[in-house]
Length: 559
Image (spheres, helix red, strand yellow):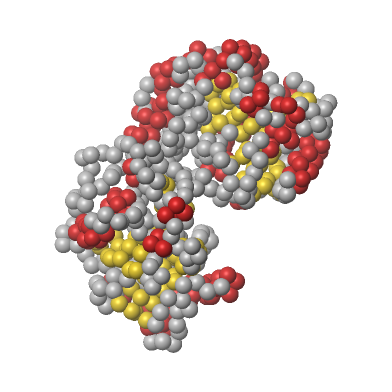
């Protein structure tokens, strides 16, 4: 339809570092062209004499902001004095205070809802706080319209409580982070982008859906982005640039397109505590970050399973694992540094160990955080998968405990294959996949060298106009692929790693095709797993043999 996108910059807590911020904005604009507006969340003003002196330069006109800048109000008692009134107003040339709460609609039709400050915990509310009345007054006029689909952007200083559900965990203390009222506000207003700050952390959550699959018509997805403080010493991201076509001018079918990495709505977590309404009376989804939900989950998933001498008997129905765990308390107290609890799939998942869909007869070994399974339609009889017990989409989203155990399984498999006269190749495709599957395929030592395998991947990638890049030794995949990035990754037995950032399309069977090719295993007819399916009886027999064979190398086995 040729609608013009609005070019927006969003920023975290400025805390009075205006010159540093605006210099950075000018650098960005020189490289990427002019942006239409800058939205600042969190604490804009600083409390030091230096910050005050810096602000005076802008206030008097000695300096001017290089972009239309819109800011939220005070988030602490100390900065209240910087705002002449609770109502929105221009504070300096090109710097506008939006106000206590409301909706700002730009010339383009872009609709921005905003709430300044923190949630009031007492009455009367301090000047830097909002109340349940403020939120109701913001929500009611918008949602009362039958045409309301959501807002383009929501600006709050506080994080929404529980936004991390179904996503990766942020680097903040989730026990105390955020407001349940902001979570309810985000759930009701359905922003396409929601920005917050105050926690000194950068966190980009995977997009989440605003409708229930198969029960409601498709709606647009929401993205939550928390930004760090300007010029923070840890160099965490504090500026976020994006283009957005206002919802009102957008083609409805384009608007509701669902990205591949979309999750369930974090604010509709099934364990909301009905008694946990906020004192302010603005109805909330949940106050606690769904601990019981994760407890039940990790229990089912065998998070603390240690019955290793007996686990062969529980593979068939999974019940043995539940009985071994017997409640989350022991797990919680016995491990004071309990890692973040494993996330749950947003829908049916074939690979979550707790899922009814998982084919438990294919399981070879179960650890604390990961498990090993025979690959369905395996390329070779010993082709296996290392999978996390919790629902993680890719290696880059794993916590350190899960990564550590994954490495233990890699070492065990390398030793196992070596005893069979094989070297092993690992690969992962984080594209059109829901649950991480690290494929581990043995290649006979006498068939080809590691260099041959590397060359086969490189050459066949080039033939498909893809360039595999070599990851330097000791470089973490997380540094190259932030969560949500689609990629293909290979690890050779020499420790060398190859990586391809998937652009638009990627052949789903690429890893298998390369290994099955003439240059390597020379079994081209087995490149597609669907052509290699076995009957349930054959799979059970293969697994039984493989379990027995792998047992001496299985660190998760205890007699």
